[in-house]
Image (cartoon, helix red, strand yellow):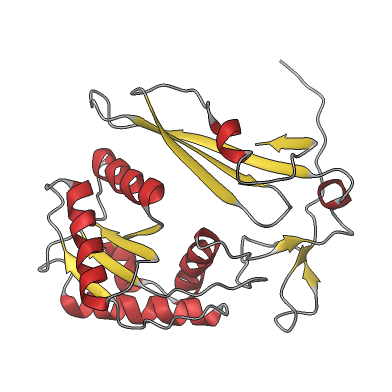
Length: 256
């Protein structure tokens, strides 16, 4: 089968003033600047790796590197020494994370803002799905592999920080309005959406998870997650979850 297509030029990217000369073309996915940095206030690190494989020193070094990565892109990190706790990956993941959230709330006397999970390098699909379900749907998360945490450089931590900033509601970069008028035209509100479905391992009774990432204004973005029947490939109910949050209904949609 053949089809007619065209390659659309990538829009120039507009960064925060003071970080660059204004705009730049994306190159090698090396986007390390933010337009709207957020604060990583109260957070906790939950480690699903035994201490003999990921020591307390490894955990402290990981926290230090992550804090430096966040500050490097302009984020504020008032809590530079969050709690870190070890949990058995064979226990109930929801319960383990709930216990960690309760612990940090009780000890730090503040509501939790974000959760960082460190998982084994050879993580199985069921554990990953359980962690992402509990955290993505119930609280914000960054999920990191233990081996990567030990050897990562500054670029890795800056990329992790970008993901955290976006999940906290920040804006990393926006398309330059002059190079992307089809998205930035105020007379035609446009939403850009992307979606995926994550399945458990074959034979598992765990539900599949559908996620839609939508960007209603060319930069601010949100995520909608939900459960499906096991190995179901559908996305529904997301329209009803978007409209109550945004007063202006988009007139155009780009779905990827």
